[in-house]
Amino acid sequence: MSAFLSKGTGRVALLHLTAGGKLQESIRDECKRVGIMTGIVSCGIGSLRKIVYHYTDSDTEKPLDVHKTVERPMELVSLQGIVLEGEPHLHVLATESGSVCHSGHLEDGTEVLYLAELSVVEVLDLPLGRRSGKYGTVTHFEYLGEE
Image (cartoon, rainbow, N blue to C red; front, side, top):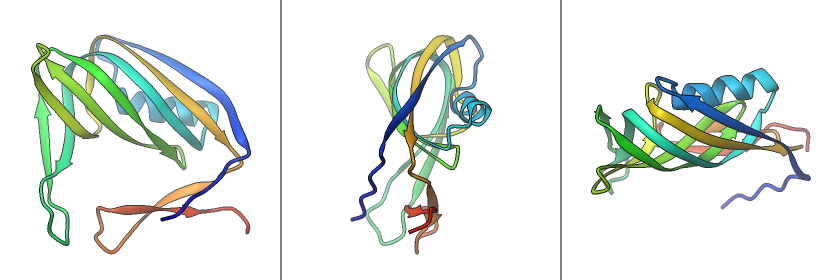
């Protein structure tokens, strides 16, 4: 286990996306625009017309990722994750008609149906990056500041 402590939080970016907005790309673009390099995506709700995601479907030494794209109206129930070096790593839960669930690691290409509301909390004084481990797809945090 690794633990990294910040000295506090900074700005909070509230994003309101409308029909056709790209979920992950919008978070990435806004973090870049305002200079949030490390952050927490603390919530995301709304509706989606297309979801692109993957999930792990193995318990073997090397993970097996299953990639899915679903184009149907659905509710965005939850979106949360971490932003490191301005790059979001997000997990999503969405439902079709309140019954069929889609959950996993969000990918580019996910589109808003009517609206989505998201928040990104800036983490101060904690320069972290994400680096590949021995499995390639599994990553770990790496402190990028001076010791």
